[in-house]
Image (cartoon, rainbow, N blue to C red):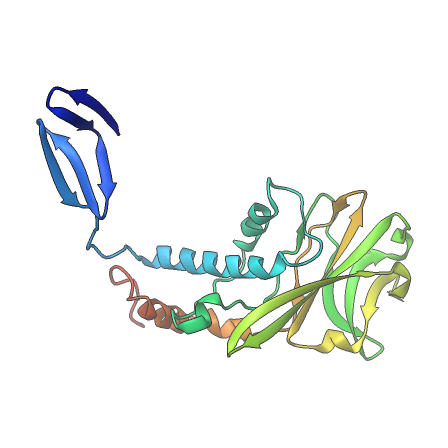
Length: 247
């Protein structure tokens, strides 16, 4: 906005927004209109889905960022890198209901790192009847120059609100079991259905891109069409009739 002095005082060229008013000049006259729109915010199905996806990714990031080590090296910031990868996760729909707006859910493929080393393939299984995290790491990959960092994700409940918390610890190559020429972490902890894990290889400042593997299924009940409808209703419904009738 510009202002200039005239013999009659100050004249405004542009717009001034203050206290809910838009003030502007038209044909030499000052006009004031309300700057507060009474129109309902657009909330189409596509918009709602994207907002729910963003909400959940942000809540996951809020927890992950407390880890002592963050290894997202492929974008300008850790946050941008994580959010780009998290955009591929299933959408969970939660109602606009108390603390649920801050809920987060443990699910497969939550990203914990992104880098230029090859992915270490991982899956949950058993070794001689004991739960294990099986990896594609070969015995001859053991090296004093490479570190292994194990991320653990835990599904917790805080005042009935689900939330994922993350921790990290270093693992010794020599603490891993050899299974058919591949390395595995073996222990009862890997049977916990409320936990997930991702083992990241780090060498000379580079890391492998890894994501969580888990048996947790709590999130699934929040991914259904029924969950979407219930969540949308709690926000005042969708703009337009976007729910299709059966059959």
